[in-house]
Length: 331
Image (cartoon, rainbow, N blue to C red; front, top):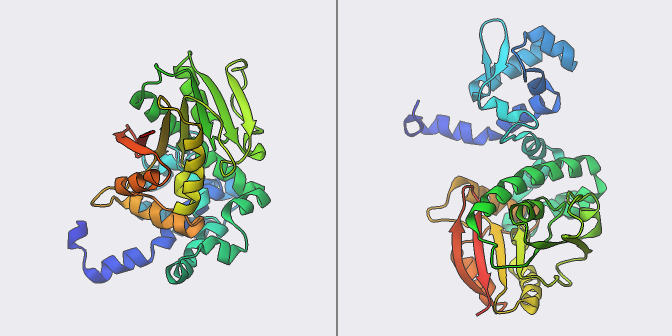
């Protein structure tokens, strides 16, 4: 049925039971069922045996996955649809790491605590888990590994989009602030051989960086963007400001302003909420409140935020992705 023709009673059921979609996708990825169907279709019993699963329950879960459109069945064997292949690890556009995050216990418990954020304006994750999201990652390395895989996927998309959206030719140096493993910086330096780079983040974040082989062009600096940022012609921040409320963002932006010259540029790579709001923008805005107290912002929000630190939003540049490049200069 077309969405607009679904009776309201059925539509509210679909919305209210959305958690079951997440649970089914998570279980198929977590147990390895999707990987078993990577190369060719598989019969039910072979899937159950190879993954150590109960055949009857697997049959019912695969039937549900068929309704979701991620698994096909030809009467004897199961296979992944084109959509379902995005659940495989390592394929272009893979959502495997994302699904393992979305279906994790900590992630779901935080979202189930949304009413706490709604009532108090506080951070749902901190209240229900007893520590901040980033502290939790430090203390739970299995989830930290999945989160890093998701960030690698996300950052690779951003790097490709950035490479075609911004001209680094006039500049000599670039600093990736909060750059983690340096994936974004590596793409930028590879595409711009004249640039020298600085990777700046906390020591645990940069210790396994991806910049080996770029000796002489890259400097690794450790520290917190709440304390300082290094000097460079171009400062980059991807998915940093959306983690924090306006007060904490001002601290970060103040440090950026301190080291910027009239010729310097700050590149903020983030989502920009449009009007009308797109589904992903609306989701991530609430999600950031739930997980860290952050938020997604409109262009007007960014303008006001930057003005508070003596900076000027030059323009918002669309990219070939859901990311936007917010070009920032000194007044």
